[in-house]
Length: 317
Length: 253
Image (cartoon, rainbow over all chains, first blue to last red):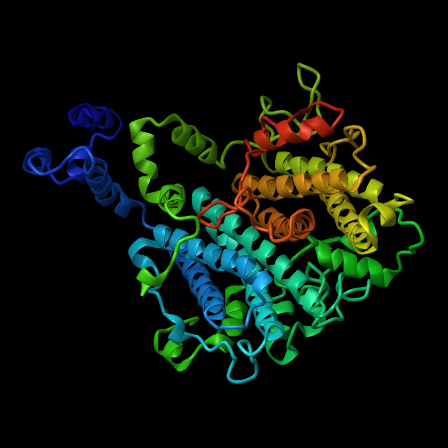
């Protein structure tokens, strides 16, 4: 590795490269001093740190990006500790489902690490399990039985899907961050779909709900249908499927996208023996588009799951 | 506390992570002349002040010099790209939904679900057609002619395998196209559809192999879904489309 050549090449494009590392002389003094102790193995790490210091701070994230990612990070902690606590509760999760819940727990950890990696020193600190109250103030019993556990899991995942969707436009200024967020977003949707299937299995059903959709709180489809009749426990979960703070964020039963009334523009496929009534069309159109949710509405939902410790740590404010 | 957090898939996590901590290193890649990083930046950095009607960029649904159909450029290109994929998906599921013996092949519950997915995909297809006709009159991609390998619709494994491939492809296509979109409202639409495709994908993957809703072949060790460029997606999708498509200007303006 010819360091001098690298710096020389960089200087052709960025004449101020040496100033970024303080002065030219100090760069080389720095190198000379380090040369005695560094090895080939530690060299890339050291170089990375130097460039991070020199260039990293000049590409500071905008407030919009920081706020959006930090809300996402807090939601990821909420999910991670939920799955982790469930896996550590003996007898709660049916044995056959443990691998799936483990995958989801580990995916959430991956999301935490990805977001922390982007946010760096701006990342919201790990709030720990104590910051969360998964009973939502005693209204839910998530750790008593699998049905209740999956019900809340679905609620958390569906909240996350809407939150990432609502936050995406605020990330457009940074293509890499936007792509990473999208790649997390679709994984949350995969999780939700699987949890919904596990809930149907517990309910003794292969397909959720009636065909018009949106009416079965304990027996959901694999996708969000209308407003899900308020979700698993409407007293807590109705806002997860309802409208956001402004008219830009309609509820999950919305059938108008980008001002196109999709229900009326669609040529529906031919299905033997099925007549598509308006009610069936409305449910299908609502299912075909998940809805974004604004950050204020997301935080209001998430605050249900915050303990006194979480309040003290400034979670979801 | 964080010492207790166990990463999925061991060491891979630390290897994959730098891919998703790009901003701090981005400048370095550019200066160091890493071509992949540099060309990606060039594309992403194409300025907003260039005109959508620049003569050198093809219109949607125009014919290229080698006889392919161009998807067009800029956001129109992205919408046509999505419209092409949704045409393919909608056609596939419509054919499954109309199978007289579908219930026998797939079993009644799965057949009922495929019929629901058929509606979702038709809805996506016709939404893009309506949006393109309104926002880019004259540039809407023509109706395509999907084609399938023999026996695609005659046995369960082939139907499920094709559905799985299309859904995962769709998820990766929307995830990869997101950064090419200039209009926030279209980005939101892409997000609204991709999560539904991901729900479909997870359902179908669980039918193929229980518990594979987010398996390692599709979700990486850091817990992130795959993103594909339009070029990568079209290379795969082209096998199922009779017309030759050109997506080289998708998102460019």
